Structures are given as C-alpha cells and as structure tokens.
Image (cartoon, rainbow, N blue to C red; front, side):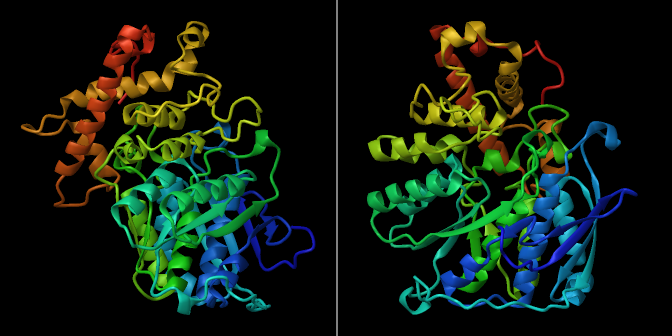
Length: 461
C-alpha cells in the first residue's frame, strides 16, 4: 500500500479511550478500483460510501482483540466510530438504523456511528478498458460470493450442474495472501470441466496487520464486507440478487455448546443477517437487491455430493480449505483438523464419499494411530457435534420440535413470526442421520470418538 494516496480517514475508540485514527491507503485499502475497471465505470458516491463503511468496520474488528478483562461478558465490545463519507446526510439520517442493526447482529458488538463529510470529495479513476464490456454480456450474470472454501466451490459446481446455460459471476474479496492463487486455480478447473469463460472479479482487501497474537481471529464483521462488495457488483451488473453458497445447517448454525451464542457464534450466512444486509445494500443502491441462500434446505454433504464420482471435481473438493486457524503457516499441513470448521468439513466429505488426502490435517480424526496419542481437547468439538446429533433424535415429525431447537430459530430470527419451523426440522433430521450413520460406520473400525458419549460432557446443545 506504500505510495497510494490516502482516500479517507476513520477514527474509533472503545469506552472512554482515546480515538485511534486509521487512514485509507496507509493502514488499509479495499481496492474497489478493480470493480470500476471490470465494469468500465466509476462508482456512485453512496456505493463508494458503502464500501468505506464495510471496510472500516472490518478493519476495526480485525485490529481489536476480544479481551476478557476489558468487557463484562468477556467477548463483546463497544465502539464509537467517526467516518469520512461523501454523503453524510444519507448515512446519518436514512441508513443509520439499518446499518447499526446489521453490524451489531453479525458482530455481536455495540457500534455508535457518526458520519462527517469528506471535504476532498470523490476521486474518480482513469479507467482501463473493461475486459468484459457490458454489451457483450447479453444481460446480467448471477452474482455469487466465492471465498474458495468448500461451500462456495461445491455450491458453484452444483449451480452450474443444475442451471445449464445460466451465466455466473463469482466475486472474491481477497483478504488472505494465499487466497487469490487458490481461487484462480479452482476456477481454472471449473472452467475446464464445464466450459465457458466464467468471468471472475477479485477485489483485494489489505490491512497492515498487527502481530499474529494481537489480531482478532473471530472477525465476525468480515461477512458485512463480503456482502457489501457483492451488493455493489450486483448494482453495477444490473443483477437483482446475490447468491451465497452455504448449506442450511451452516447458515442456521445451531450452537454446539450453550455458550456458543451471540457474538461467540458466526452468523456470516445467517438468514436474518442476509435480510438486514439486503435492506442496507438496497438503501445505498436505490433499488432492491436481495441475498439468497439456494441451499438453505440442504446439508453440506448433500451439496458436496454432486462432486462425488467425478475424479476432477473430487480433487477440486480436496483442494479447498475450511479451517478456523487457516493459514496454519506450516508446510506439512494446511488445516488443523480439530476446529469446528474442519470437523464440519470432514463430516460432509465423508458422508459425500470423498476421501481427503492424508496430509491435509495436522490432527487427523480418522487416523487410529493419531487418535491414541491425541490430547482430549483436540476431540472436544467432534464430541460436541456427536452429542448434538444425539440430541437431535428428539426431532420427531409427528410431534412438536424440542424447545432448544425452536428457541434458537425464533430468538435469532431464522424464522419470523407466523413462519413454520417445519422445513428446518426436516433439514436437521437429515443432518442428524448423516452423523449417526457416519458414527455407526466408524465404530467397527476402532475409532473411540464414534462410541456414544451422551453423558460425558455438560452444556452441549
């Protein structure tokens, strides 16, 4: 980012602390010029502001650790933020309520926004000729958010299979150094397998990073940045919606533990967050743009299964990464193997019938030799998934769903007033049966985690 002209400033503080100044181009940069060059046009002021807001929230979230002694519940934070924008009246008077509800829901924190005018005004780019001129597109593509993880990759493959002839535009917000190369390699395989050009838009998001020990790892507000970039692309592309390829189980995210609620639970694809993001983006754009979950009624394994039996697509699934601790910064392994994301991925891959490479995980839950020497803490999330599956045996289609299930759906607004929880009962019954079937297959193979453990741990949902 050295040498780039600063575009705007943002100040933030916690509690009564002194404000800290962050400068675009010095401390961070969202390269929205990539969007402008792709479409051959500059962004309208409110769209520039939308990206400024989203990037600022993401950077502040990433640079501010959740420190137990500093906050009453040991997790959530409270921020005051002052931000330079091009249209402060719109953000302060019209969009403030929607923005605040959206950011606070997805992050679990308290945000107090104040907007001031950027006196320097907008800085239009001298654009290069678009590689994909609008006249050659024959109408808008379907916009999809593409991280390079298993969900977005399997989802894109599934949509290409289900919708022959439909054109898609994957959008990647590159926030990790290894992400661009991995995503480009994945899309190269998909283009070769399905034919067609499959245009792709990469938007780098750079942050001057603190020491790894000082960086907040949860980064709940990253989802807001992804949504806002996707919404801006949809606005310029003339698209009415943005597709998010997360399974229903991942989107609903029923807590594994009693304490995994609020900001301790990711809501990156939560139906209510996407409704709020739809409202925020629509207000900034000036027309309706909706975020849609095409696989809300399906498990992760059901989506991934469409890659089974095709050698090239199975290799593609293995190449993806889904890990809370990624990148591990180890040459020998790319995933930890024991975090919730790794366990969820392993379950989906195993149920779908795709065998991972032996060197993928640092801790391999399917290696009997490793299991004998593995610390118990490395098994705690796997045990939690199994306990949750056992508890989901209470889902009976003939009776009322258990309170713990309906409470989560209602309290987090997965389902709204007068909406039925029935579709989610069917979804989680399928997911439960996948886990119980996988455990049953693993018991004869000598895996101790497959043995019923219903009363070994307390506090598991």
